[in-house]
Image (tube, rainbow, N blue to C red):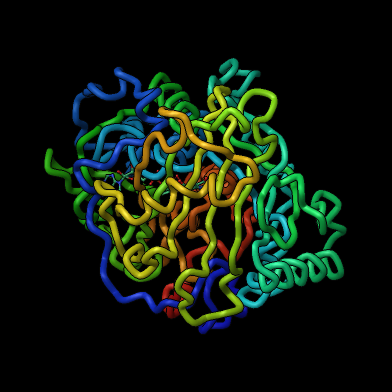
Length: 473
Ligand SMILES: Cc1cc2nc3c(=O)[nH]c(=O)nc-3n(C[C@H](O)[C@H](O)[C@H](O)COP(=O)(O)OP(=O)(O)OC[C@H]3O[C@@H](n4cnc5c(N)ncnc54)[C@H](O)[C@@H]3O)c2cc1C
């Protein structure tokens, strides 16, 4: 279903930088190493080798969270495919955004309503801004969790998160979005607006909102799914990038350095790297460089004094001001309860050089200025953080690549004009909260079910209209 789109509008997190047309590269061969991977890298997934298959019923390109979930859902529905499902991964398994993110599962439950409404209209915007408990339940109770597969050891935590509005401009914009959502769509009973936000423990903050959120260990969650899918017959090929997809005699031929695979169905789940082999996504799903860090808290933020919520600090909403505004951008500070040792995951620092983040696929390096920024986030912003003893404070810093889209909406479903090719990508830095429903949806579509059955917003569909739109970030 097409939506009445404004071609000039940009996403809820945009500061209005035009994106130049440059396809993504294939994933860098030596990505930086995250806190999550360092603590949980699974040896059986690292040295893993299965026979290379030249024929498959379906080829899934990538081994991030979305394809592992999609593979799992497909194998549950169709366990007896004659040629099976092959998963091609350019690197070792689970070694891109899924392995290096903040672990923060933070549905947007009011904030983006107004900007999305301007782009796709009120009805679609309200489908994107879903009731947060739906998403959290879907993740927690994904098929198999507890009932079929037993408990997944991924430190799933469910609680509340703060939007900390650091400027008056941000406070007004978020309040407007909240009011509009509440007045025209639904009573936003799950969001608490806090005019006196001392509970955030921030030194300077204009206002805050709290809402249901969660966090989990993304590497462990995805590794569990991947192993489960492999036990059901998934053929995983690591260090095997797909380099081209071409139509030959009614089949899709996928080239890799180890040979070609013939199939009728392909799932592109390559997120920020999508345009490397699907050039139509050049400038539409844009690789966006991001940085996260792990921080060992001081005594005043440990034990019973641990931060009780996750949070994001917002300096500016972005979409209201479409001129690039150096120094005014969102900084995400994430208090993580994963693992339960109290480590705080802090990400952000885009404003340091936002232009250099766009179209940047090099996650092998961390920009030194961002490391310095992250080193000081806790002591500069949190009340009574105190002096850091040797070993407290910044522990590890790493980079990763997200897939940003011009409208902030994901690209899900059949690719127009390429029958048999499907996409599940463009999570715009929100994959943890979106992937569970999107991966289930794309698996349903690949199994021949109708879009309506997926319950996903229609504005996630891939249309020529969306692909022609000018993109700003
Ligand atoms: C620093 C950072 C922090 C983030 N923090 C959060 C957060 O706190 N909360 C949140 O919701 N989201 C966060 N995100 C976004 C989130 O991580 C992503 O939305 C999510 O992990 C995307 O998962 P994915 O499976 O789509 O992609 P990825 O995990 O990026 O997987 C893509 C995979 O495709 C492979 N690949 C690419 N091209 C090819 C090819 N041609 N052939 C074979 N394989 C290929 C890659 O090697 C990779 O394994 C963050 C992202 C970053 C970078």
